[in-house]
Length: 446
Ligand code: SF4
Ligand code: SF4
Image 1 (cartoon, protein in one colour):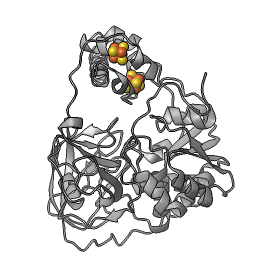
Image 2 (tube, helix red, strand yellow; image 1 turned 90 degrees about the vertical axis):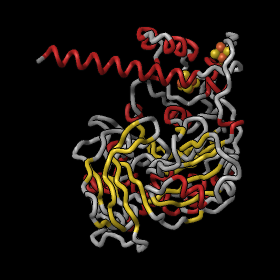
Image 3 (cartoon, rainbow, N blue to C red; image 1 turned 180 degrees about the vertical axis):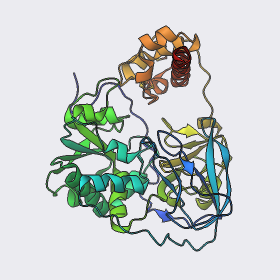
Image 4 (spheres, rainbow, N blue to C red; image 1 turned 135 degrees about the vertical axis):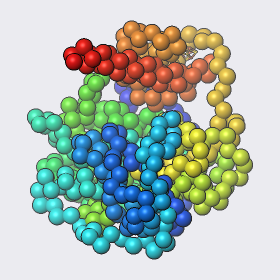
């Protein structure tokens, strides 16, 4: 039986939102930005600049003719000093543009607010803006806003849940830019022909709820829905269930249940872009964790090296063991502070050895807590076993690819078994197997 607006499973996490009451501080541009040409889910962009070129703020430095891509822009004015492959988190080599800033922040002269008189112009403008899902997923926004023909979208859901510990960048966006948020919502509703919008937000954020009700809640068709605070309330499927009681089947998309979900900061950015024509070149980032001297939200230029962001936040109060981009549950550990803030970076967290080390696992006591906590109704222990044995049949049978890597199973496991890490491995095994099958099929067809 579901409690009101509460999905199955999940976990109660400590909030640790120590930066919630600190207004965002704007960081000056760094001496050098490092901008990867893959900052979205999809295909990598081709560079449109080369070493020695002078670029201005908002100038395109990478783009692709493929649908699943978003253009990448320079966040500073200055000189391109390098275009080459670099190692990014997750062990992937990505073509990356380095730009030495001239300190002038000269905007590209040709940038003007986009002309938006119909849906086609709107979608083209969203693409030009370079927007991707800013909640962490990095899905190209123009693709998300173009559901397949036949989809009968009737509701826009704004994701303001921000359910991971520490992160408060969306929260600060609501408090500091609520009029932009309303402008973005109205722009989306008008251009997509929608009459209903629900803003879903966890009920542990009373100040943001009050602000949303004051600024957005009185607009036609817009409602603010406080939701129980339970991780992962902000996961797309959980949020859709909580706000509309619609369940997205495995392998399906929000458009299959007639909704579009947009992150709150993404929507706010759209309104700003419509006013100024300045594409996505900066990002609000929560800089926190036990090792950060002065935890705060910082507005940074995309491409700012992590070491510069931490230095701006007062440096480290103690030596970090692990630095994570994103939240402690779903974020990605960084191998170096020489990597940089990208479009969907919402937090940079630094942990000492107490929180940064993986605990040693002991034997499974078959308590079943991992299955109870799984919001996708999976059997994490079976997935773990199948992955460790590279058992492709079981990995498929138990629905490995449906795992959204929320980490609830690992969090609740009393034996500290590294469940989610093994499941990620299992997903990679399945992807490799699928790629091999495809390659064999293509070879046979020649
Ligand atoms: S199996 Fe996947 S979806 Fe289920 S709790 Fe574990 S990480 Fe989350
Ligand atoms: S929560 Fe941990 S100990 Fe309990 S059944 Fe799952 S893997 Fe085993």
